[in-house]
Image 1 (cartoon, rainbow, N blue to C red):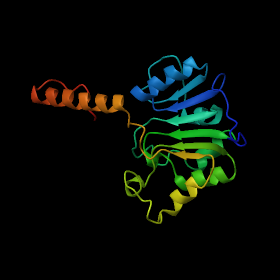
Image 2: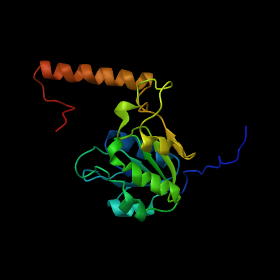
Image 3: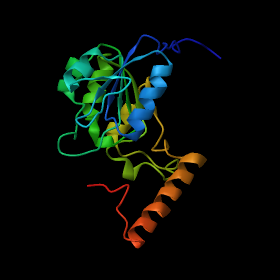
Length: 194
């Protein structure tokens, strides 16, 4: 095993920006506090907690690590684009486990080439429906953007598998049954999405 190119960094005393502070974002805030990170949160519905609530520009400019946990809508489509990268620290780590279209993939490629983006972790990709959950080992990848992304040694793609644990699948099943019972019994919906 060779250590060349594998030097990492500790989260202690680093600034981590969380975009979207729902259940997953809140859980990550707690984990990061345990590591001694300074946590910034950008979410219009964030409640005070063990983090600093701030605007997106401040989060982008001050964070060493940025993790996306927000929904995809008109305001968040390609939220991370060339303009956003221009506000970030050089060498920033970006993690997207939320929705692929939160990132402009071409902007990510440009930022990787200039080393503005030091690390990129993707569990999702904008055009993932043609790539993920299928065996393509006997095919030539026709998605040139994805091929370019995965050609960088500092990009890790997990293929929308972040949910794929026994515990997560059990929780999904339990929540689905709970939601169905609420509908059947005419109760207010705990997990209603507006």
